[in-house]
Image (tube, rainbow, N blue to C red; front, top):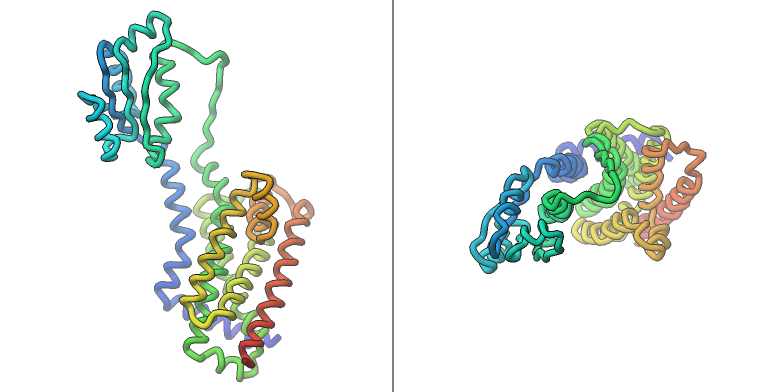
Length: 347
């Protein structure tokens, strides 16, 4: 390996990325999504849910009680059809069809029916579904059979739980979206051929671009950690998984770019591969079958390694299986990448 050549390739890619506005937008995407997600979490605490209510008669006290709730914006509908129109037109997140004598039946100790219709694809409907039972119980003067103390995590703590997700996303995104761009662009412009006829070898090209991918991944990951106040847990272990994860996904991106003839085909294939990589890592606990499959992709080891290091303070000695798996993935990916790039050179 020629270190001077590797560093020259790194500097060239770095300068190109700074000048390329589209590439800068791609790089900032994980940071932007992290900020947007955290803002959405904080906004849900003060969300007012629009609700339409149709009262068939004699439940004014219940309607008044609903209207007094600070988290509900109640609209009184004059018919069932009107209330349904409000829901279908997305004017409200839910409708409550109150039967005649609803309030009187509750006061008499009876169990009246209450028809509720929600749009499951509306975000505010989710908030309504989390609150409406408690509100009805409060109106009826009923209490749970146990005393529940519910303590909510602060916004800062909630964001820390999401940091491993955003770092994993960054590792995958940089490796499989940015790196193919650098290699396929050079193939299209014929500059890769010029590099390879110089003293630079295929390994120098791979190492130089891998160094560039590692630099970008660490930089963006640090930005995400700083924004979310995520300097928690075992930071040495977090760094190890960022490096190993960056290496394997950079290798995958370069492998895809080595096969592809242009950036469009490389980008398409990278996008198709990214979705299962992300979903399998996040859904591994959903079922035993998904858990088995998820261990076939490196993103699972990156995600759980960072998660355990940050949230459980796990050291390197506690994470040998994940580290070992990522090392194996790295060896396989780079052996394939070297062979493919060399074969393409002489084909």
